[in-house]
Structure formats: C-alpha cells, structure tokens
Length: 386
Image 1 (cartoon, rainbow, N blue to C red):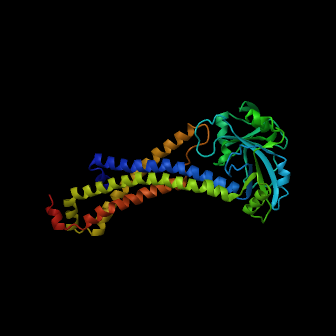
Image 2 (image 1 turned 30 degrees about the vertical axis):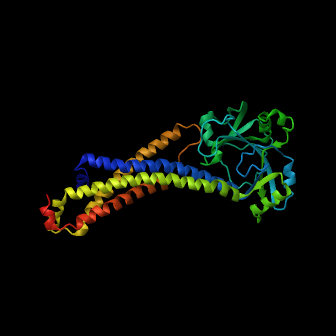
C-alpha cells in the first residue's frame, strides 16, 4: 500500500504516466492480435500445402485462385506421373463476385470438389453439426464456422450463394484458418456457376461437365512433393504445378515481414510509454531527496532504496499494462463480434502474457537509472536538499 501511496502523491502525473503505458500495451494487443491472426492463417496454409502439389492452368503462380479453366480429363493423365497417388479436381470462386468487403487473409470462398481426395487429405476437417458431402450429392453444402452467422445457416436449412440455393448438410468445426470462411459444394454444382461468369467468347469453348480451375495432387509415401511438381511441369508445360516451397516463398515470407512491422510499430508505442516512466521516476527521486536522506541516515541500505523505486516503476507498468490489456481485449472482441465474416483479430495466451511481461520489464528497466541515482545520494547532501 505504501508503494501505491507513493505513486499517487502526484495524481495527475501518475495517471498520465500510467496512460502512456496503457496506450502502448493497447497498441501491442490490438496490432499483435492482428499479427497472430495472420500467422495462424499462414500456419494453416503451410500445413495444408506441406505434403501435396497444386496445379493450375497457365502460369498464374502457386497461390492464384485458378481463374483459367482446365479439364477434369487432366486428372487421369496427371495420375500417370511417377510419384502421384491421386489427383482431385476443384473450382474455387469468391462468394461475392463483386469482391465484397476487405477481409483479413483469404476472402470468403465457395469451393467445389470431386471428392477424390477422401482418405488422403492430411488437413482434417471435423464437423460441429451434420456431415460431409457424399460423392455425387448435388445441391448440398458444408458451411465454414465463420459463415454460419452471416448466412444464418443451420443443418437442414437452405442458403443462397451467387444466386444458387443449397441445402446445408454440415457445419465445420472452427479451424481458425481458411476453411472457416468457405462454403463447400460438389464439383458438379459449381461448374455451371463458374461457366456463367466467363466471358461469352470463352464460355462457348468450355464444357461445363468437365471444367475445373485446379487440381490437388496427393503424393505417394516417400516421394518429395517438389520433385513430383517438377515432373508434372515437365510433362504438362501449359500448366503450373507447385509444391509447398512456393507457398513458403510467396506467402509465408512476405507475411513474416508484415507481422514484424506490425509488432515493431506497437513496440515503439510501448517504448514511448516507457520514457514517461523514466521521467516520472526521475522527478519522484528529485522531489523525495530529503526523504531518501532521512531513510539512509536511519540505516536504509542502497539495495533497499533501489528496491523501493524499482517496485514503484514496476507497479506503474503493471497498472498500465492491465488497463491496456483490458481496453485492447474489449476492442478486439467488439471488432470480431461486429464482423459477420472472418474475424480480423486473434487474442492468444502468448500475446497476453508477452504484452504484460514486456510492459513489466520495460517498467523495471525504466526505473533502473532513477533508482540507482537515488541509492547513490549522500545522506548529508540529501538532508540539505531544498
């Protein structure tokens, strides 16, 4: 209690100093939660692409949405390549053809699959309600966790996507990655949807019954995905086959830089708050010089003086840290609850613990110089101080 009373001897100064730490921690929590969400999306992508090869028409690159059509007849041809266990055709489209609102990470998608990846997919999806789509089941849809509220989806109810009506047969468990913002239907159901959006000149040249935009290629055990991708590219020069390395180069590396910048900005905000602690503690030592002299005259050691002022700076940092955490968490929850699509922020235990720990360490470090300055004061000189 004495530490608290000492801190609030100058109430306005203490409040302003605590506010500086609070704003820094608030920035660290909010921007860190954004970075955590991005990191989780990247980790999910790394896991998904880690053991397979993806293939698209043309030279659009590994992470393109596969806008160029290819034929499902390519599946059988690709499966003849050495090292390929099975190939599965799919079509991925934006749920909103106009693009919709800005989303963190992958935008809401509707995907059509042929079901040939069953039993080989390492990225497992579980269901909160209902089940997966059965092979050849048309008119059915599985809804990602983040789309349930937006579409008011329930198992057995109907939803409308891109003007088409689907019956919900399953709702996926939350994965905190891309599938949360997806709707999955059969390949047959999405083929007509895809062809309708093509330019008229191209539409007449595409067979809706065999069209796809990408292949997911499952690799035999013991085979290297990158090696298999090279074999496919050699045999199919008009297509682009990519292994997990492409995801790491195109997405993971760039997002790592982005998250570092986000954390860097938040850290600067917190460091500015730390400078206010240095200023406050230095002024406190100056104002309490005679008090320090009296304490030293009656036997207080240098260590006791240092401990006293370090405790005060640590408490200031902790109060500001907890307040910043509270307001940051409220902001994150409000932003996520107000978003009917994919949540923009992810508040993790490590972020909470890291933010509070950093604030505490910063507070202690900020109090080091004022504390040692106080401890070095001569009792005689301190008692004479006006």
